[in-house]
Image (cartoon, rainbow, N blue to C red; front, side, top):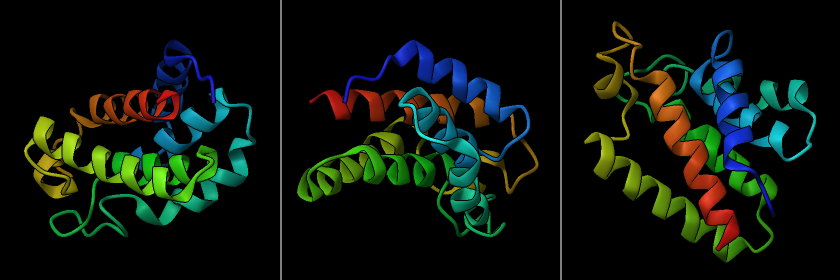
Length: 130
């Protein structure tokens, strides 16, 4: 898969204006890959706010959206699983946690949301090129 990182970033920023982190990350990556985004948006709805608004208990939507994108765009199941684990670990190392509530202060501070979506999107591009 030959995705353009700059296109992914642009699309994620665009979608994040109106969509959740899970939706924006998934839609941005998949739009850049030429997949239909409105239907994909539906897949990611429930992951908003750390899976159903659980914030302090749920995984960041940027991570879940990126993992869904890896599953859609990757070709080999074992590589998708390996890349998903790598994303999880690198995201946790970068942000101190993969928990939405930790990153967004239980949804009270969404200022890091665009950044985490971009980080996850760029990692997906990197992994798909490996």
